[in-house]
Length: 105
Image 1 (cartoon, rainbow, N blue to C red):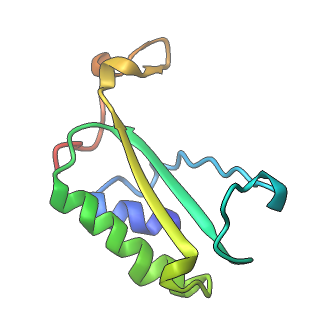
Image 2 (cartoon, one colour):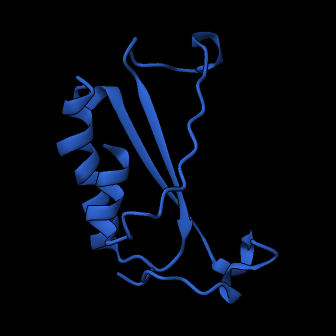
Image 3 (cartoon, helix red, strand yellow):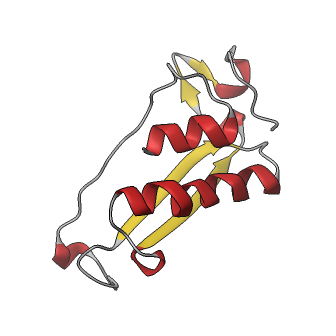
């Protein structure tokens, strides 16, 4: 579901599967809203337009949340962007990395 939201909203290739899931215990949450509370942080290169970021957030609320049985108050989505120069991937800076997808959507 999460992968489908990212690939459809941002046009990433289907084979682009880099997801990390971190489980927090209840006592690790500072202010959970309820038992079903889910926080999704999307870490990505800068370059997406505000419309593309809104499309991704909408996909989470329109598709992912209902599929997981979550209401709007149970989900929080944060898109965190960093310039490619601030990433190290496969032995090089992100701005030197050939990509098979566009970031400027």
